[in-house]
Image (tube, rainbow, N blue to C red; front, side, top):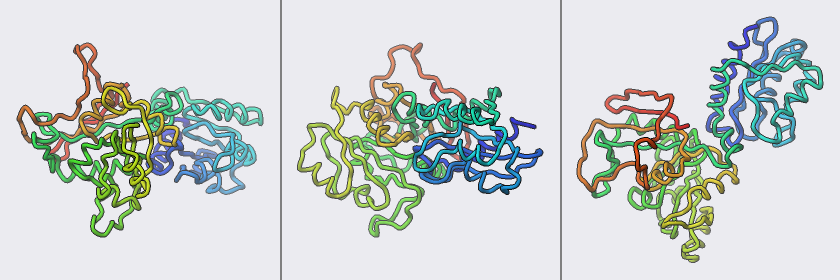
Amino acid sequence: MNDEKYLRMTLALARYGEGKVEPNPLVGAVIVKNNRVIGRGYHHYFGGPHAEIVAINKASAGLLSGATLYVTLEPCVHFGKTPPCAPAIVQSCIKRVVIASRDPNPIVQGKGIRFLRQHGVSVTETKHKDILKEALRINRPFFKVHEKGIPYVIAKWAMSLDGRIATSSGDSKWISSKQSRNIAHKLRAKVQGVMVGINTILQDNPFLLAPARPDARSGGDDKGNNPIRIILDSFARLPLNSNIIKTLLLGRVYAFVSSYAPKSKTKQLSQKGARLFLAPYKEGKLDLISVLKILAKNGINKIMIEGGEEVLGSAFDNRVVDEIYCFISPKIIGGCGARSPVGGKGIGEIKNILNLKDVTVKYLKPDVLIRGYLV
């Protein structure tokens, strides 16, 4: 039986859940008997049936006995929003389970494998390095939040060929092409939250919604799969008539403030429907690590930072960025006062430079998208 082939199928299925199942992991499952797929499934949405159960339910009950189940992640043994998967696998008389990776969650880790073996099910953990690498990659947010207690962080920006995200006056619409902006909007649908600093709100008054900007006058009717809008706002300067407040019915707003924020303003924002969090104020800004830990405790394990330069700079200074999307437009802005994408302290010596791994380059006509990972 070709274990590698069927595990690759589970990985492809798992990706369909991206942006819908978080904070749960992406999981795909395939059931095979006599070299024929008799059931397949993936975790569709948070709170819904797990991939193993979807695959079992799609298979004919009479064929399950003696079959092999392939799954991207170790089956669970605990009750959450749904019953555990491992007992259901045993009850279906599946004889063998092949998994791509173990579950890092302490509630599950190793316990699912042990339960299956104790009940007569053979369990194989893949030894194929490429399969394991991909299984870990698609669930990096899930692994990171359990191992480090903070979300997976994507940094995204668009800049000119000379490395500028805005002119010296702050004008930035539009540096990138429409195609690039459409890709960026779709990315928002694949994360739980989009983070920006208050200066970005005051300068651009964005909606930060996906997949398309709603009509500000009507409030919009395209709900899409909208992320939580996360605003770093030390002094609660978020305008009550800003576009993200106007569109609270389309997407939640989490505003992080310091103890210096006026209580009268924070009360007004709360009354409008924004959820406020208090974070430590250090060295003239909110402590980003504390913010990320609060987000993780509130079930958020994947965010995208869209700016501005100080927020991105803080993220790189704190070494919390995991993945980068950089859109480069063949345009020149120039000027000593024009803004660059990454601020913060930066590095003092080239030997400490941050290098991207597994870099891909995509030509978008006329823009170029560079994507890579930091390890």
